Amino acid sequence: MMIRNKKKPDPLFLCFLAAVAAFFCLSGCAGRASRKTWETLPPLVRLHASEYPRFSDDMSCEGIAEGIRESLDYLSRLPRDKMFTFGEDRFDVGLMTASLSRFVDFIRTRPSPEDLNRHLASHYRVYQSKGLNPEKEVLFTGYYEPTLKGSPVKTAEFPYPVHSLPDDLLTIDLSLFLKNGEKNKIVGKLSGKTVIPYPEREKILDDPLFDALAPPLAWVDDPIALFFLHVQGSGRIVFPDGGKIRVHYQGTNGKPYRSVGKYLIDQGIIAKSDMSMQAITGYLKSHPMEIPRVLNYNPSYVFFEKVDKGPLGCIETQLVPGRSIALDRKIFPIAGIAFIEAWKPDVDKMGNISGWHPFSRFVLNQDTGGAIKGPGRADIFWGGGPYAELAAGHLKHPGKMYFLILNPEETRVP
Image (cartoon, rainbow, N blue to C red; front, top):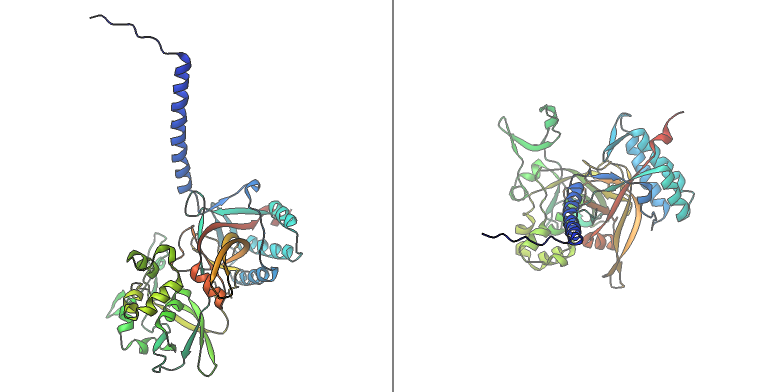
């Protein structure tokens, strides 16, 4: 059999093929590497000064000074060897305190935007949140301090209880029993000599004897408003005679929070694009028979205590409207100063949202929440009143988040 001599390929063509193959290989590898790199990033990533955002603030300096004062109060109560984690770095209470004190001192000079950015680039480290995707986006939502109509005693008009912490509720710190460093806590109650899980929301509400175990602080007129008081964690209750009390989260039944909004979306009842606290309220008020089924989808139940001031964050400091945020306290430095780029609503004369526009400002990490988990979630505290309720109910927009801390060498004694 005769074998023909094949024509040799053109060297230029071979170079072209090699270049194409290398391009696709590198592109594929780069994509995988980029994805892998993002997935393995710590929650906060230190930035080079050239990567810092453009710092600006849409609010007055009084609010940030007030928020920093609250964070400093919290830090003053901690042991001096307490450490705070910024991604792969750790810093002590002293540096946290110096960072906040020097920041507010500088802000009180009312610097120009240029001076502000030069100062932070020269004196502060900046860490960016890993976010929820490779673009490092953080999903921002909001919460507020609701005002409910209530009564100090149960009446036909006010039949829904705001429960205090039950006498039979037990909180067990597993770190006291386990040697593997587990710090989780469990909530339960005694059944004989055995600790069993605490009942879910539905069983609590159906128990005619529960009021004796958890004496109500007040009674309110609206089960939907009460449910959102549980979600917000604090609020005011105004009585018919003009008296009022402020209540604050004290504990839960230990059940995980489940979103009734997501439940209504999954059921095809409310479109995802239309979901808001106001949309949930509107649906339930027009379908009152659905209230127990929908609200009981969330098994978590919150117990409250009376407080003299507030609302209070998880570090027992007073929240500042627009300046306090809630984050996952397991991964972000509590009481630390952050910078956010997010969105806020424009409201027309009728009290409706007419649009959204971007804003940026400095905030303090002073709270947490059952649904605020991971590096890609943040909850802005808007305060009280109609605008706060509107913003808190509708905000679900992506943005960016950064943490700041003073350069450690600036606190070292020569």
